[in-house]
Image 1 (cartoon, rainbow, N blue to C red):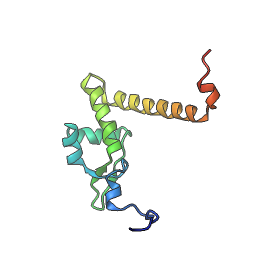
Image 2 (image 1 turned 30 degrees about the horizontal axis):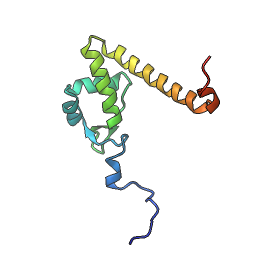
Image 3 (image 1 turned 180 degrees about the vertical axis):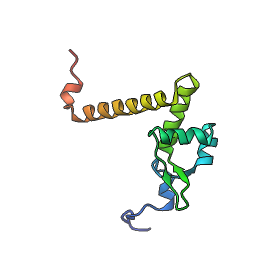
Length: 116
């Protein structure tokens, strides 16, 4: 039996598969997965919604989190919303979810069970 060992300070290659913020997807692969063009992904970068990391060669690399945001924008665009407006909606939704999360974490348990 192998004794318990502390996790390494640097994530191993296998740990990166579970990291939703690891830039694992090239622009071409991301566009294929979303069913969009590379230009659509560039427009999200220009709008400031998604800022992909860059590889050593300067190529854009996307995370799973960024692809989820892009998929939501695409859904809105497919229903007739302009790209800039869709990006703003996604930003506001994200801010709302974060504010709700903070409110829940700061509320005492007794307030959660009280209904006026």
